[in-house]
Length: 201
Image (cartoon, rainbow, N blue to C red):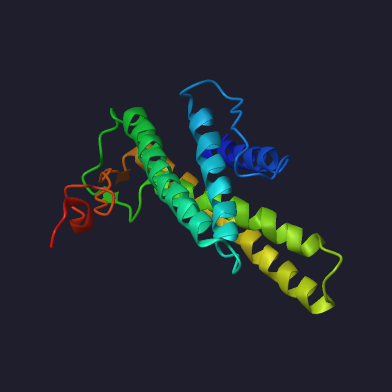
């Protein structure tokens, strides 16, 4: 089994579990062993799924401004949780392949495995919601055809991205690629770096 053959069904499971209630306040019920890679993949997609719906809600043109501010804070926290989890998944790969000796001509990839997996998780959400649009019965034939065409592109993208991720992991395992994790340098969350938070005049 390749790594994305592990990921993709877990992402689908998380999305389906969320949509049982389709409520951003539904508590997560992660079915996987605590701190296993499966646990982190499920958690990663659950965060992405909740945030997807946060982003839908905040675009309501009639949203109450006070409610929008509260929601914006939740989105900010979700983004931070998402980034922290990506780094945790990359740490899993770093530890797994720590004894692999890079070949003399080994190269580094433009992104780490976990950031590519982050894109794969979000792609699973795009596929789910585009399928919902395809399945609607209250739209025009033109809308249906457009959504079906988009869905086919998303499915092809999922196949290509999965293949690329599996190839990257195989290259790291064989020493043809090496990876680094650059810890997040977000400044707006840091009270020592955001001038609004440290009171710069």
